[in-house]
Image (cartoon, rainbow, N blue to C red):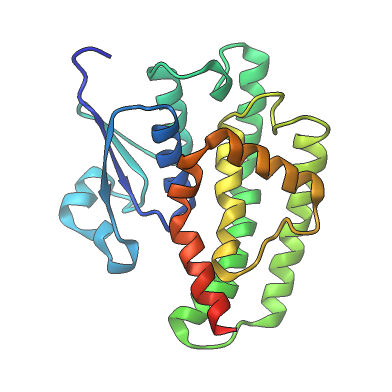
Length: 228
């Protein structure tokens, strides 16, 4: 886009939605710069960042003076504002509605339950020095199992991707959440061949941008498994 400056993304790559935004920017070659915000250091609470996002959360996108929060809104804004392939967020109402259907469900299901497993098994023991609460973890894994059933049987079904034959924002958001428990050494898809194949297709579609964004997760997995 002539006359536009590169967008600026405020990200912490420990955050699943932040990784989704970065992957989308890189994969679609949208000119961008990244301002790293370390949540563990409280950098989201500085006056400067709070002015950008009073909710003190990442990701945040700044595009030529326009500031936007929330990953779902950011990804859909980028998909409709920049020249990216239509399959990400299709213009055809029925196809777009399928993507919206998943993203509306995503936050209280895939995101919530995968993140809870990682919190209980990875982050909380790391922060407190206390062992994982087995009962809480078993409940979280059961909740995630129910979510993965729906992901496979309601959304994926016999398709290549969650909303059809091509990758979309739904796949991008979902895969970043499902990758998170790998940071504590758990592959939540290991006994689910259909979802494993789906993840491989998503990873192949995203090429290098996928592994670059998830490098921090791979490093965490190495540290976690080395302690076992």
